[in-house]
Image (spheres, rainbow, N blue to C red):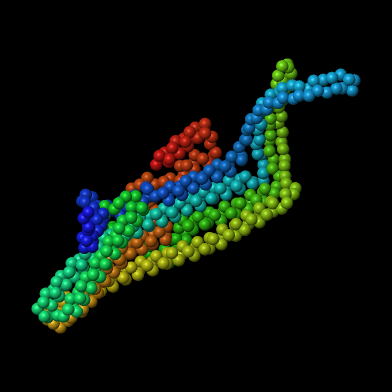
Length: 470
């Protein structure tokens, strides 16, 4: 078996990384392609879409209480025994009967308890829709981060490879100068140490590149091909204050919290209405036959039933107090979400400004470091500088270039973070070429509690099959 040396292993790793990150020609993958892949394959989005459909069904469950409830029942009995009358005549009680009955129950009036439950379920649906939008924003922001992560990692690998080649040349120059007595063995050892450090840095960069590739594959659903340069930065709002005001008005987390407060208020109304009577219309049809006998019974009944609680051990009062406490919690959460949304906007703008300043500083730093490096290297050839000075200057230039790469990647991530913080990082806002998920389609089919055999129920079945296929 052939053993791969450490040097050859490093070269092999570099080939693998570059092959994965740069691809083999053809059209380059764009940031939009990555966003489309993340939107279409996200299991997290599928999970929360299913939770939204479950919330839609809660509306159907609540609405079903306003419709007639019809049940059937069947009963077969065998009665046996005997009796004797006061006059001494015996009687046989054995007989077999069968009965089939239909019962119907329709709620007429419950002081708004059911209506409040339906309205609360609808508010919960609206809150769940906003939660789904928040999840969508998180998925797309992670895709941006993964895309820029691969670009940053590949550029860091290339930078480290160039640095390794340069230090290799520096080591050869130091060895040549040592042979002619211009430098000492210490200078050669310093060059060797710096070269070893460069190899370690390259290995770390290659490992980070593989990690970035795995993150991209997980988020986008496929290995990164040849990635194109990122597009123009998105334009944020006019300023921090304007962005905060926009976020408070339209961020999905804020809207979800508002709908949750509305649902909690309606739940209080429903809990109070449960303490009042309910009026139901009831009907029954029954057919009873007796085996081996000509006797039979055909019966029917219809009536109005009024029921109301008198004492239930304090359960209803506790339900009202619990609903009120949940309303207070929802209101408190609304204030928390408002502050968090405003903070995220401020943080995003601060990071955006920091990234821009870091890029400008890194560019100036690179210019100065390159001039210093070239000057130190020329002075070293004249004997005015040591090998250590040259290596330090080279390391300073490397650090400046690495900082610029990181700052450029961070700039794009923070720019899209601003969109996420203001609630504008969605497939619709970005105009991605995808089939945007329509939450109304399923809701419109189930809100009236369709049965499986109805026309609407059959249409719903087709929608469910399509969702399962997707």
